[in-house]
Image 1: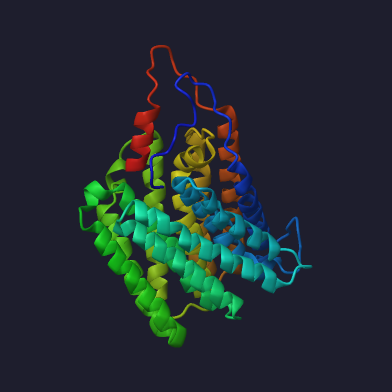
Image 2: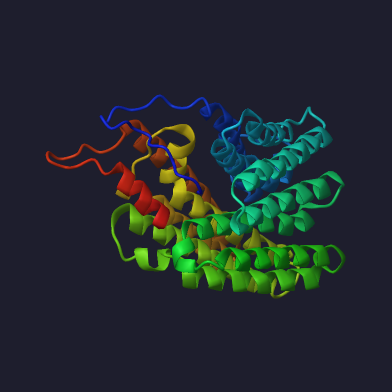
Length: 388
């Protein structure tokens, strides 16, 4: 994520008190658990909760309730003003309201529209601080999320809202990668990214009237964006390093692979049935969750002041996510094997649960003990992670 993250521990090695911002993470965490529960229901597998509305709002809860709240909270932290936290607060509240059967769905939809609008406005003071193209791209991406939530409020089905949410997550994450790799990407990288962002927006607008044409154009633009990022992202070189640097780079490159998969599928037109399932999970699990896994050890200390040390155990959920997605999308969606579809879906749920369980345990255990004579290198580590 952009900005210089604060240290999660002091120079003496003592842990700092977690930030009050942890409260804003609770709705996001609940949204994640609800989304995973809904995933099991949609797979036809046993799930802890069987709320009637849950499967129908599965996608919105995960994208806006979890990912949207997480990104908005990071941006509000970077802004450092009280009004910035309206966005993650409303996104979290909206995701909770649409899960409660006794609350009219329209109420939750309205709150999500307010949340995405506040999220978009959150970028205005950030833009006034720093006039650069990646930040403007993030503002545009938040606007796409707002447009998607408005369409959903207006009665548009999630299958047609999906491309707008794809634009939101893909452009937001791409902009943050460009921010972290300005040196390797060159001074014109931000301008190129913004041009691609407007191309994505154009594809979405075309898709409102011509769904197949819009999907194909979106696929072309995403393929160009992915290729450009892969060529210039420093992760292509740092994957040959070791430890946390290699871990982050591997997650980032895996995310690009899944984004390329989604782009290719979109070239066949507006996704339906198996192609829809493949695009959704390639983008929101393969691309988005791989990127979150990559940056988790940086995001958590920056936002919550909780140290999340890297441990080799993080590789297990990352590997499980990639393998399970491959099983779901290739033999499951591609060849039409229901057993593979279910197995891959269940594996992805297990991977996410395992990742966050590993993160919680790592945070509780704290930084590994340093051997005698080892110099504290927290600042160098943060710099290394940003470069990955």
